Length: 420
Ligand SMILES: [Fe+2]
Ligand SMILES: [Fe+2]
Ligand SMILES: [Fe+2]
Ligand SMILES: [Fe+2]
Image (tube, rainbow, N blue to C red):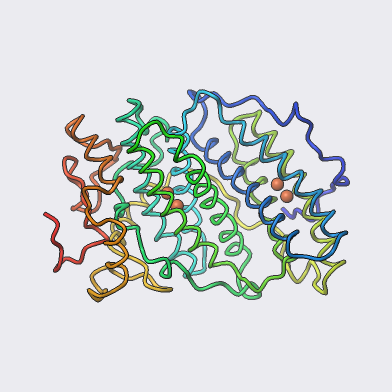
């Protein structure tokens, strides 16, 4: 499937009126968990497109191009509004958060299993275990505060058990910047992966930035703030994979292409008929955006479409499903790693004077006051054990105890751990 071959109308035919911009929301009792993850992903993709085009407009001195950008950006906004209101009024912010983390986990696992670039795969596997742990912390908060079982919300497609504990995620920010790809050499799928995962993690980061203060109690607000800082780390990591030497116009073309790829994938994958038709409609809108971006590329620069998209047919489509075995294997092999400049290393290989320990101690001077840990302790106090959904025991022995939350994995060296 090549989106450049689609027969599309002029952009002015694609505006969405206000009535259409407010669609019927899904039914939270019967919706597929993957419909929810697709909605969050496309919401985040539209957010990224919108903000990318705002930044572009602020950095180019070309009135005609700015007018074209304003036109496309208006439609990205309309798409975003339409998608975000698919979430029903009766789904609370913590239930929505569970879907955000489920998306982060399943999307990351799918991309990691399909990408050929080793540098990109290493980043995906690394952050995968962190979002996996976030799901566990939020699920415990949800069960404590609302009595809702998160395993029902995730359809039992995703396990809920500790990953690399959240307390271990706080690294010195310089260790989150990774090597970038060279877009003249990278394959199309690798470029798509960097665009997709950056948009998805950024959506989560922004959601926590804007919503954490809305939660109903102090502990929940603290947990959103803590995990929000980790999402900042994830966005730093993923955006650093992109090739910064691409021009604004090249990047615009790739943004529209990414939207085409994702809407086409969502359209093929969707099980809800009403929502499927939205994905289909937005796919054709994106083909028109892509056509416009390509026209501008050739009009205002020396590059051709062929330079940016030499093989424009879609690579393997994105299709959601359960990845339990893959995630268990990554957890088993890499729970104890951290990031050291552009590499990932076992925590035990770091020198005691490494900035990781200094920064981590500065952020949590006492594990007992770390919100991620307090949430589990509160659940254990109330229900005598934590909340989990496991198909088998956690693959890491230290993370199997349901009555005592571990704060050492990925944070303390075996020979110098003082935690009891
Ligand atoms: Fe869009
Ligand atoms: Fe997360
Ligand atoms: Fe994340
Ligand atoms: Fe677009």
